[in-house]
Length: 179
Image (cartoon, one colour):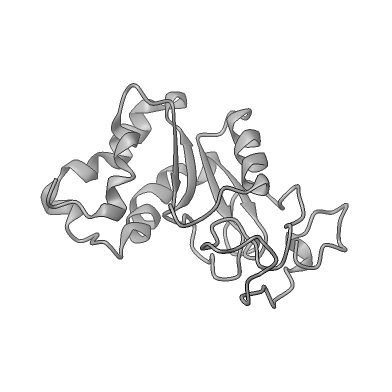
């Protein structure tokens, strides 16, 4: 509706009883092999929610364009959690720039213990039982899950300059300085 900002529209499929999985992504970000692998791991798991954090600036629990949910695993939870989208009065405080606030304040507390997380930089910031390093090394330093095109082509001037913390690297690959 008119009261719902575009950034929140993308969350509406979470209320559709015919939808089993919802992946919220930004259209200006390419789908990478690295992302595909962690989404496949999530689909084959029993977790309700997947959150991806792959950059030093990804310092919030759920990024608006980097989560996936398995609605069919607990429809009532997702229906209850996302029903605010249908309440014009309540949802108005989450304007176009506050989609991530909605996810952090209303969704995260309900699903954090049933979340699978992949995190390359902020792995010690969030208390998630099932949090892992990425199983694949990034293809280049201009590539992270959720990057804005053009990226992942070794042609961008925007390179990761901060090595990922050793705690966020795979145990069998401490040599992956940029994970």
